[in-house]
Amino acid sequence: MIGSISPVGTQLLSKPTSVVPEAGAAAAGGGVASSFAAALADAATEAHNTLRQAEQLSLSGLQGKADTREVVDAVMSAEQALQAAVAIRDKIVTAYLEVSRMGI
Picture 1 (spheres, helix red, strand yellow):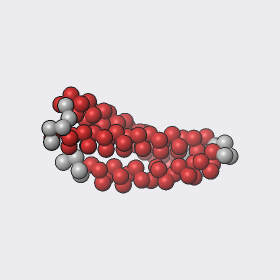
Picture 2: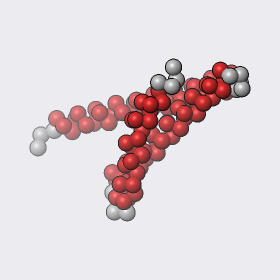
Picture 3: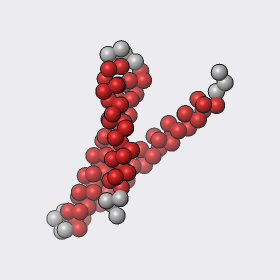
């Protein structure tokens, strides 16, 4: 059941990490958008790493190699990271819709 999350996370998070070189190039110009892109990419990478760690720890727990408390902590941390990612996505979509409704 956790294996189905990994492909989606990898697919969604592959785009923000590809933004980093562009953000680095634009950061030399001193743009605010570049620092936002870099911060967003860092947050996406951190969320991906948290989800992957929780998945690995869950598998270790199923094999009897990890403590139950550690597994629960990792899963709760992954849940928080996923909720934060969804909230950020919702805010970005809302902002995009507001900008698209603006008159030219």
